[in-house]
Amino acid sequence: MTKNYSKEILEKAKQIKLVICDVDGVLSDGKVYFSNQEDEFKNFNIKDGLGIKLLQRSGIQVAIITGRQSAIVARRAKELGIDIVYQGHTDKRSAFNEITQQLTLKPSQVAHIGDDLPDLPLMQLSGLGICVADGYHFVQQHADWVTSLKGGEGAVRELADLILYAQKKLDAICSTYLQ
Image (cartoon, rainbow, N blue to C red):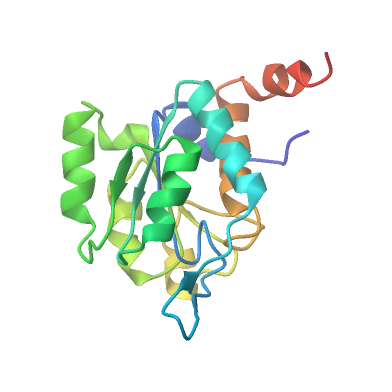
């Protein structure tokens, strides 16, 4: 049920109490569609949603920090029970600092998953910096770990599995679905 995670990645993942997600290119596939009626559409993956719910049920909080402002993101966050949502933050560091102070967490207890240059500062501040498989090459080079799945195609679920496995919670969670 597991991949061959390095000892270093497992040690970092054991410490995680908060996962911060970017949206476009991470929770969505990065495409934004606009209609003639000024509607905006994004594509979210249900597997990522379940991964977020499993993290939350295991006591790991999830937050969103995104550079864009979108009613769709607010709706998706509400559906998933994500209460900490920062939209329209081009400099994501201030939001990161507010969240970690509010939750009294050390940066080593935070994982950040991103895909492009604006995510790099948070990946470097976090104890575990993750880039999605189709993220920008420079960001991948500076990530602690790169998912095998693309943004919007299960990358967040892959991260959830890594954290839950490292914290020895994944097998018990999966077993509950057999009963």
